[in-house]
Amino acid sequence: MKCDDDTFVRVDVVLRHIKLNNGDKPLYMGNLNLLHRPLRTGKCAVTNEEWPEDINPPYANGPGYVISGDIAKFIVSQHANQSLRLFKMEDVSMGLWVEKFNATKLVQYSHSWKFCQY
Picture: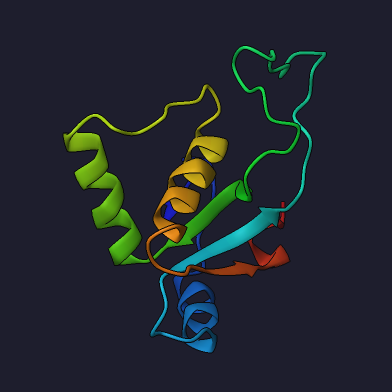
């Protein structure tokens, strides 16, 4: 699990949500943003050079998200051989990396508002 340093994590609730999902598949769980367009103006603007695509990959934003161990191992191995595409927003970077893993083994994307309660 990744979480912001200013969050309080109810580990019991997170574990309960994980158990509700099929444990056989790689898991990416959080407040998922699907089919979001990149912001082209403002403080968080992304230029066409940085991200030429019209749609961002599915990514979890907010105070935290969960990835399964197999996805984490994949990311570590990809980092070791320097084949990860880095992006200026870590949540979108994670979405890119999970999408890359998803091309090799189907990922269960699980949206939950519980990861976005402020």
